[in-house]
Length: 366
Image 1: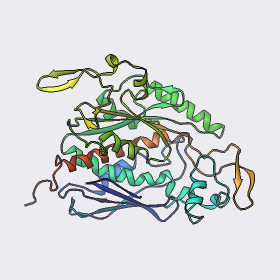
Image 2 (image 1 turned 30 degrees about the horizontal axis):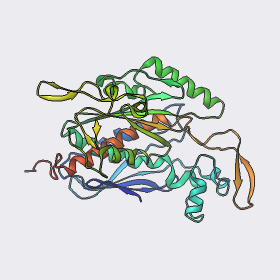
Image 3 (image 1 turned 180 degrees about the horizontal axis):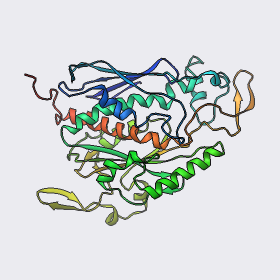
Image 4 (image 1 turned 90 degrees about the vertical axis):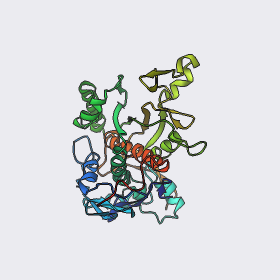
């Protein structure tokens, strides 16, 4: 399936080394002010080539809105957006056509599609397809802004280096993208940068964790049983290539806690019901409870590494070795931060439209 969503539907298309990557976003309300600059601002956050810590693939990732926007406003028609692939070098991938790269989807894709899959750069299994997520997320963020919901993400761990404090809302607004690794703390950021440079110098890679946060989410968002808000968030987050774990609030730490420690106790703050803690991550019974949504997403190390590894030759049916060449991120995490933001924003917007919190027409044009 290449589509996701119930009321706001995202359909992705394209391949890593094909002509372009694109998305069709159906169900967006009419009357939303939208221009290419709104989308480009989000795309620039995940673009390669911005740092020596990223892939050197020099893509401008310039968006073109093909349909669904007229005179600066969404029309209610499907919004089609595309980004062309311009800096493509597929030559190294001929070697990998029948020698699957460890850690990649090459082998299961070869089996699933009978060898007809586009193997260049991973084809439709490439992280480059997250461009489509970010374009959709940019629209979703604008929709959420109409009802005061803010969505942010930031890096909390690279390898063994961790950020062990909660960032302030102001730090999330102003400091994330000032750091090449997308960490709000300057000292921790420098340590993260150092470990990425170290593994890169050895031809290796490293993983990490991104935290996503959503503020001003109203209580009651979500549907039991199989339309739960955390279930839908996890579904899309797990469809980011390289994601291997998703946890909300205390997450796996909850397994070591007593009920008296985990339970988020309720209090009134003015006329608003809040909780003293947020171990549930803002979601209970599949429904938002009015507290900030907090989710952590674990990314595996980039599988493309220059170190010699074992693989097989599918034509000769023998064991062999491979050393992956090409332009790859030594750590996926920094460029995944805007993707996590986009996935959270899209899912929240989908649910908000479904409940009528975001109307089908935003105002009336005179």
